[in-house]
Image (cartoon, helix red, strand yellow):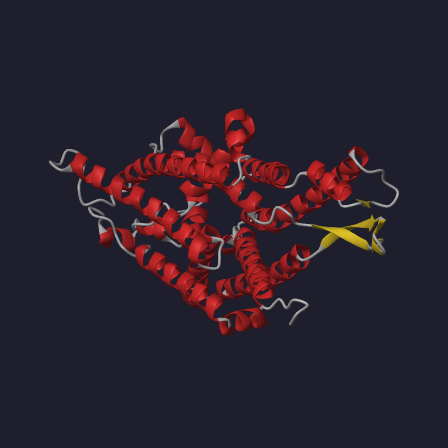
Length: 437
């Protein structure tokens, strides 16, 4: 990994892209520290951080959500809009036809996604302003002369921040090293890790007696689980299932072509971190809605008591969504029929499998098995820390610091590996030597 970045830094074109990406991320972090008008800064700094699933959403925003800054909504509206558009593309035939129109269709789908992002940002911003008002973090109160005007200004600022984040991600895709939204999410989680580690250290130094040993044990256990999770993620992400392919011999003029053996590599974790991001966005919706309501509301009571991140119902829904989105993402990103047709058109065949439909059925069967293994892997990495937190909480010992550690590490390591692969591909393109060299 470090050698790849070193080689990329020596390439002038890639060096410019890396510096451009770093500049965009720096601008984003600056925006994540800018407070919007009518927010009581002193009250926000002294207020307790969000708990439960809102803590996870706050971590994905780089703590901008709990600080009520310009980028408080972070990438959540864009990710949710992407999920909605992908679902609608499958459900609505007209959108499906547009998506198959090549580059022009891709531009139209992207434009629709932008409008959906703005609409979701408006709705989320309104609810977020109501949440800040309910916990007395605004300088204006209900009944004041400029109360409505202040809310309109804050909603406009939060919505503009979400739109600006979407634009920054697209600039990284166009002029940087790619994976714009993923890179922003990567920077957010790394910034939250720093605060989490410092918070754990402060907790250990404040405690006395046997609580010190318990706090040190939590730090050691968290570091051990993090190291083990990173090793497992790297190993599994780089693993692949290779389907052998034999190409037939062809005689063209006086020369013979083909007759070679190759393989079709299928990644064990083809879906990457997207199922976890999708599932996290969906399960965070009830807690987000409950935060906008009064504590006496029945829905708020239900979420707080039965759908918090340590409850069996929440963990079960989270696991089911990861599995479903794993199959859904593979279904929209990999077409076994198209792959089988390409193999047949190039004169290839899988040994022991007839070309055509039998080949596509065979690839589909292998793909289903790989997808299930990948989904189990994502569940182990993402849900196991939540289960540990729930079990320890039941015995009166709370290891809250790594409840969402697995999901965070999966996103960070996944984005890092994907970025390294993209850089390696770009280096290979620039260092390719033809037969005349």
